[in-house]
Image (cartoon, rainbow, N blue to C red; front, side):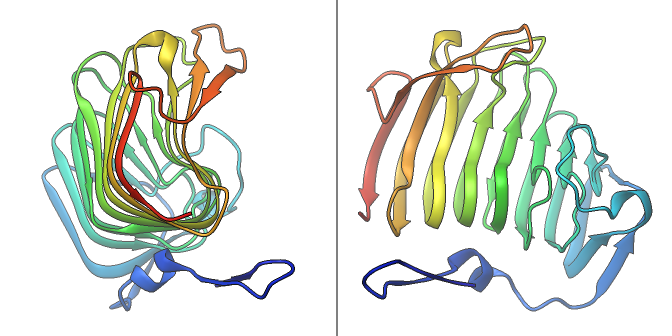
Length: 241
């Protein structure tokens, strides 16, 4: 994909698309694949079919992959449609996972004391969120060596879940290519802590973080600030416009 800026002819390469390896095959998924232990897709492309194949933006969709606590998903390409991507019921590792066209969310995290690691991989065409964090207390999310383009938010700590908690997230060595809204949305009033260490921004108007007043009532959370504040959002080694 190529995005053309208005006025001056500015061209931004879609880094996330460029990062996707050539698919070694393709599989249509009509029922969620449940993963315990390690699932290595050998860079096969998986796309939704049947009830998983409408490509909509509705909340509450089923995932193509459901990871049990402690599971690892690696070397997988999620094509279009991708339903609700990947669900982690607890701690999980996503290594070299690429989303060519994010559906509702690329991945959703749940569980208490859950440690989530996303290493390598890429995501593109996320109308809203890439990674949705619904975890309870404890644990952390680390996203490193990841490329994202054409997105709303790379990460969002749930702003209105019925059970809330202070969530810790770290972004390391991220390349974010416009169009994009913000790297991360956090709930500073609930004790969320975001650390950004190493990010390259390609193109204009990508914020590092938005700070919200989260709630447990289901109401739309209120945005209370933007940008690093040195407490809930701390950033270093940022390059780009």
